[in-house]
Image 1 (tube, rainbow, N blue to C red):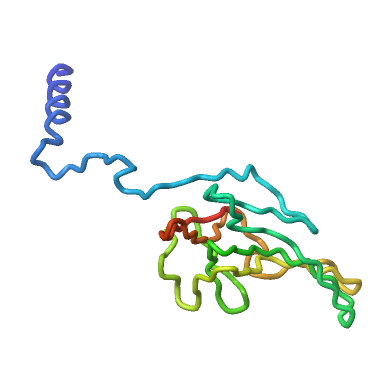
Image 2 (image 1 turned 60 degrees about the vertical axis):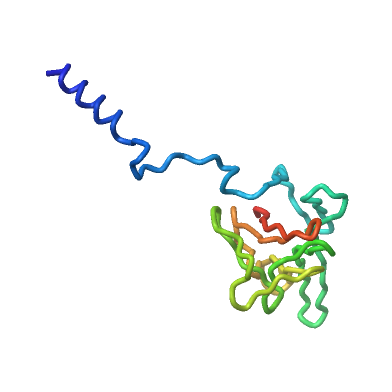
Length: 170
């Protein structure tokens, strides 16, 4: 009985995919995906008063800068610390009303044509999060990216006349 079962399984296994069958053979990832360049950021942190400049395509030009601004509001007796990302002259960020950018999940495709309400802009600034510090209330955070973990900011880079799309994990 065991021999018959083994022979039956071997026949089934060997005949499962033939050249004329519709079984899809695995493809080389290079056949389906464009040229990719990965820049490891090693969990860099951005703190108040600092900036992080990134040359993502290694051409000597900063493509993206993450920075903070301290903004004092004497009327409200409140200080605001704005965390933002800015693109350069050869890179673009997807920006919507209020200087926001959509948050993408892992495996989302970065669209060439942005979703409604957003456009690709060079030399753009996207406001990610803002910490409010006041004498009246405990500190609190606001803006679209205030509570993200493993979300992705879309970026577009122009190199040698071609556009490349990618993302930065925040």
